[in-house]
Amino acid sequence: MNAPPLKILLVEDHSLCRSGLTDLLTQRAGMQVSATGNPDQVPVLLRELQPDLMVLDLRMPTIDGFTLLRQLRASGHQTPALILTMSDAQDDLAAALRLGVKGYLLKDMEPEDVIAAIGRAARGELVVAPSLMLKLAQMLETGRGGPPQDVLGSLTERERQILEHLARGESNKTIARALDISHDTVKLHVRHILAKLNLSSRVEAAVFAVEARAAAGSGPR
Image (cartoon, rainbow, N blue to C red):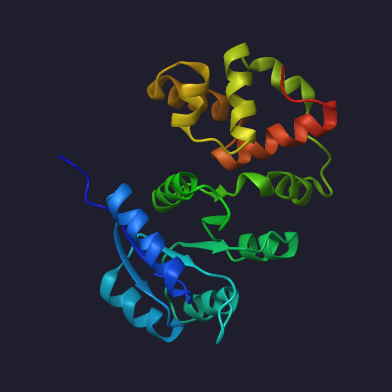
């Protein structure tokens, strides 16, 4: 039996962006999307729709996404949220993560990458724009030092290759094409990587790879 379509609530004040993203998610990914440009409607829509994920713009005329999310959490709404924004500021990324968002994506990402990341976030995975991985690694590295280099020795050559692709924020499908292996094989390798490095998500693996690259002066070999 096929799983029901993911339900997404899109909160975006720009009508063109709102319409375009709605079309992408419904037509290409088969998601069920409800969209609004009015933040005041969000509490009612959350109660009525019970979405799997709320995708929030960060800069809106009447309220910013962070303030809206704080208000929603204070009033008892716990729907997972993802920020989709033009801001690549480290402070904004840090604020979003402190609020417990499931993702932080940039509007200049490729449409297919945005679709894939929203799908992963709706299924519970933490996703971050690939171009922000270094900033995320720098944030997490503060006060703890880089990752132990000898841990990489537990990975096979293929797992190291896949870890480097994860550091670039690539999807399993993209990695499979690049390495000429099956999608299922990539999924299996990713599970092994997470287990060996004692990590819980692809984002953590990507951050680990960025930190290791910075410490060694090059990517995993």
